[in-house]
Length: 148
Image 1 (cartoon, rainbow, N blue to C red):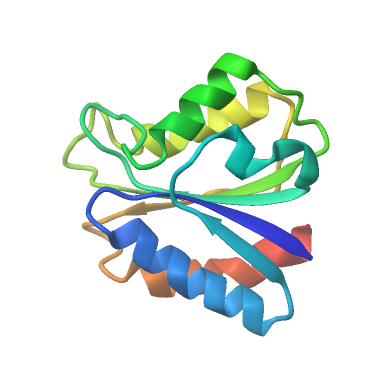
Image 2: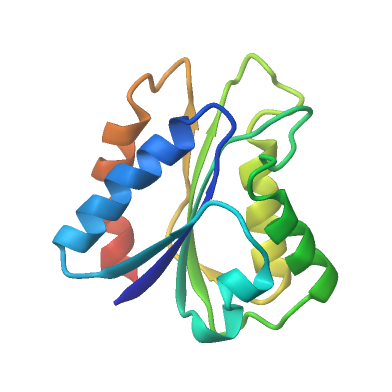
């Protein structure tokens, strides 16, 4: 199965998780592309069927800067994504209660609004409770794949 990873990372933790998830998916025979920037031409939403968003939060609950241009392009172009299924791994720090998981929640809302279907429950990780997000993501991944 072809899977696109969309990775939003400010401090590198989400990218570290994505690297391990990518390796795990590829070892399971999946064709994986990782997008850490770019725009709609790079994403090619019409050519995709499965996306996994792995994102942290920045600022006051914002999408990380590296992936913000893609997020904004999707929001502005509003392509129909009813053919897409997606999963979400969100990372944040509950100490920032007003903006906790704001970036991942924005991705979830936008993809749903554009017609994509979320598969399974998102994996939402608080840095205080989940100091090893890579291990949590690898433990969550098989259940998500089974639901695809």
